[in-house]
Length: 219
Ligand SMILES: O=C(O)CCC(=O)C(=O)O
Ligand SMILES: [Fe+2]
Image (cartoon, rainbow, N blue to C red; front, side, top):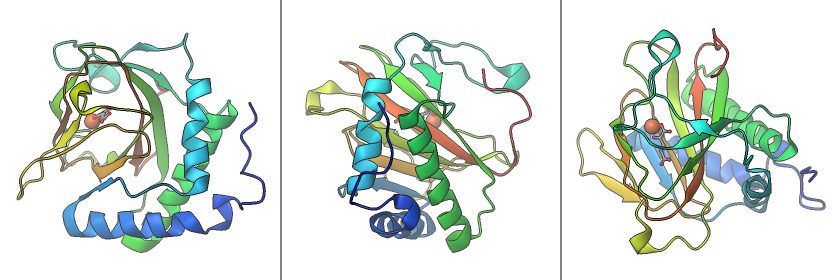
């Protein structure tokens, strides 16, 4: 399915509706170190995210691992999802990477973050799957700086589990259901978080803005 900008509505590359969302994210990051956004998507982002579902690549999912490069390992007591890296070869994935790049440039201007790249994968949690409390980056490694998760689950019900819980340093934990249109953005080195066990399939895209390019290929 081709996924070019929605006809007649303007590309997000031209700026527009998403600028308000970008500014909201910047403010929340400044204030709290995270943003859990449930405020409604622009037409463009709604279209981009809805476009991922038909492309959800059924065959190249593989069990997620923890750690990076030499220390990478599968550990199903910590993490049970399956992932598929987004390479940008397919139109929906490309549109998502382009959108994330606009956000990267905005946040660089606004918060001087110096983000240089973005890596992202689809994630599929099956019934009973979870991701225990963790950080997305080891402090001081100057690697993954900002995490971005977009949820793709229409009709997510309260009993379906799968909430993401953020654990801010100086405030009570916050939980959000992985409903379609919700975005979670948080500082990767500073925000412990977890995914509670799911009672049904849970689809998402997770990505990380980095301050230096990948040294080894994605596995
Ligand atoms: O899917 C989520 O809500 C968060 C996933 C996550 O923490 C990760 O992939 O590192
Ligand atoms: Fe994480």
